[in-house]
Image 1 (spheres, helix red, strand yellow):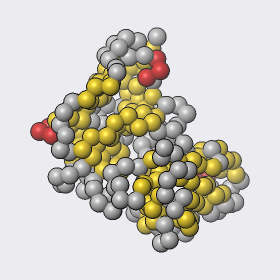
Image 2 (tube, rainbow over the protein chains, first blue to last red):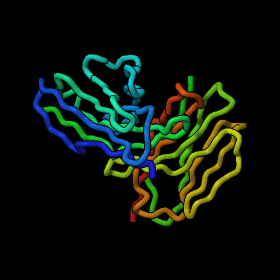
Image 3 (cartoon, chains in turn cyan, red):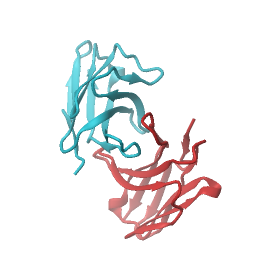
Image 4 (cartoon, rainbow over the protein chains, first blue to last red):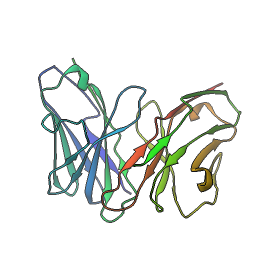
Length: 116
Length: 115
């Protein structure tokens, strides 16, 4: 149980285009989802917290107009990287949390974004 | 604010050696959770263990063992008789409790196990 999927697993896009990454909780309802970014040989950095039906809360330094997050249902959150640039190339990981279980996050397999 | 320090950045051992990965944490909360995750080259995080702040018992799972000591704010991870498949990046993480809780990761330790 508690499986989280991400799609796509890898994406290559051209500079200036936008790309959408989906995060789905497959067998549970996730009231809260998290988006992390991981640069090569670095740790996971939280970008934003997404609550179903409300606006995402972004961490300091993360541009909310560049990284659009939508959490329209209890099983789906999307991250759209708008006007992507090579410096946005990174590994993006989402996680999902069960309602009321605040200490546990279930992680997706990650999406590797390359902007050329 | 909470913080997790993994002072070791890279460790290289020969197969069958034991290796300990250190983790030191800081938090003002009395109730918190500590985690270890493994990240193999594929990138997917693999959950290894969760420990709450009220449970200081050490835990053993096969070749893996964890030593939680609140007195030194440490949560160390030992792999006994390491294997090549243990090669990965290992992250220690800390979570507070409550609806606004977040997971804070250490910088990770790259473990290389040579045959």
